[in-house]
Length: 146
Image (cartoon, rainbow, N blue to C red; front, side, top):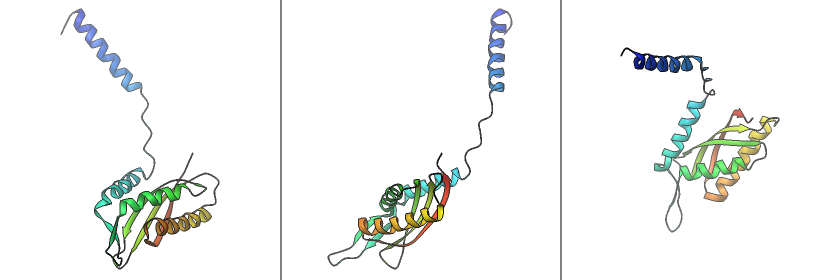
């Protein structure tokens, strides 16, 4: 297009392109973000897996996603723990689960002590709230809250 209208359109396009070019690039996403997102997707998709408690009148099945929610709440109640993603896997040979915790800690907290307290809190909470045994609790400190 030529003439005043075409010049105006070109000027607007040129201004928009210069504005885009002047924007600074966005920083890279935090390390491990993709893995953390996939852990949460896996936990949400886990509702088709169940931990089973046999009983005298029948079995009680608890979705591993329910165990993950209870475990995450238990972790957040531990002083020094900011947040966590929890992956739960049922154990085939008994009423037990394996827990993998991706932990975000508050700054200044001794991490080995925090991991020990998180582990103890999870073992107790899972047993008290579901009747399941936490056969193993792996704690991975993945971040420090800011």
